[in-house]
Every structure is written in structure tokens, then in C-alpha cells.
Image (cartoon, rainbow over all chains, first blue to last red; front, side):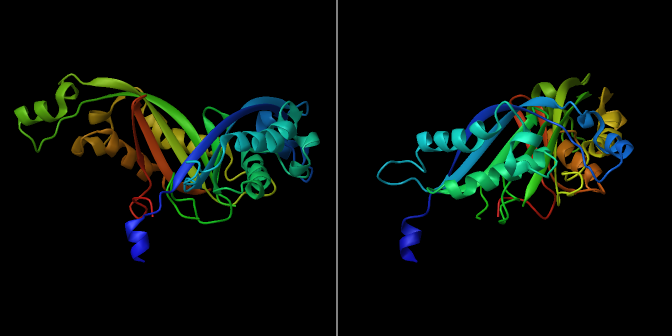
Length: 157
Length: 141
């Protein structure tokens, strides 16, 4: 116990931002055509439409004493490229991304799919938050299934 | 999954920082330029974060149309292009600092029926922002 008092933990949160562009449409086959239009509005256009998504991925952890890093940014960059950009950039999310198959590709569902893709790949530190901007005025924060939602930066998972 | 949906809104309003509990000199000292009797204005930005389960039939925590209509009716319409001190009842008795504005906006939105209100953030300028997450939440746990 005294050890922890003398050497407190230094939890640090590291965020990397990437962008990808993709198209989607909102349509629930269980709804009537009219219901789809009412619930989803313009987003129900059968031809789809697109966004420049901005993704911020936050990893929390204590810096490794040997490297001074929570995790190597190069490694995070490669994970994001492989798991997100290669899968989603310049794709039609409804038809080309298996992780979203059978779901309506809302910001909520895309953020959750990204969390599920990234969480097992982050082996140094832990995935703290996935923030996905659909536009500058709309974003979703995903904290996984753990209890991290009440804090912007500090909640323990 | 623990998800928060955040939407950004804008409104423009004027205000004056002046406390009836302080003397004329104290008001000038504490509030500086903001104590100008004629008031001044800002382009405010409000971030509203809500949480809740994602409805599998829509993929949404809350339909943005419903959230926008609620925020518009409770906050944007009554605040936009208004003099806050005179035209918003709360600020006849409370100084319309951005701290108080944040609390007032949270209170006006807390009854949103379709999701749980998590947090309100107000930017007075690009350099100042304030957040409020309700009484019981407070600081980071």
C-alpha cells in the first residue's frame, strides 16, 4: 500500500485522429416505405449519401518506463489503417462492411463496430473511448460495455 | 455498449455581467468590460450529450429530428437573438455567466423524454467553454 502512496499511478490518455469517407443509407426492411421515409428522412434516399467521418481513438495507460509511451503511435496508426481505413474508407457501409451487415449504419452502430474491431487489437494500455464524428455538429462517444461513461477522461474501466 | 450521442447547436445572444450583490465598483472590478451597462454579445455553441440503449429498429439512441426539435423549443428559440438578462426569466435573478447559462440549459433539457441527458457544454467564445453534467455527477469519479 505504501508503495502506491509513494509511487502513484500516472494514467495517461492518448488520442489519435483519422478521417475516412464513406457512403450509407438508412433503411429498415421491417418498416413500410412511408415509415422509412418518416423515421429516416433524407437518410432514406435509396441511392445513399456520404460523409467525411472523423474518428478519434483514445487509449489509456501508464507510460512504459523504458519507452515513455503508453503505446507506440506507429502501432496504433497501423491498427487504425488495417481495422478502419482499409475496411471503411471509400466504401458503401451498408453493402461492403461485414461488421455492419444487417444493421442500420448510424453513427451509434459504426462507433460500436469500430470499438469491437479495435478493442482486442490494443494490447498496450486499454481502449478508453472511440469518438466518431459524422459531421462537425454530430458525434458519438463509445466507451464499450464497461463503466466509463461519466467522465471525459478520468473514469476507471 | 455505453454510448453518448452529442449534437452541437448555435445561438447568438447579448448579456451583461452585473451582480446586485456587489457595489458598482466591485462589479466593475470583477466583471471588467462585461459590466458595460449596454451589454455585449456572443455566438454561443452548445453541445448536448445524451445516452441510452440503441433502438435496433432504427440504429439510434434518439432520432436527431426529435432531439433538435426539443432543443430548439427549449433553448434555441427562447435564447437566440435575445438579451439574456431581460428576456430569459432565470437571468433576471441570476448573473448570465456561461456557468449559469450551462446549468440553465441543462435544467431546460433534462426532461428530454427519449434519452438520458448526460452533459451540456457551452462555448462562449472559441477560447472559453463550460460543462455541466447535473448535480449528482460532479467531478470525475
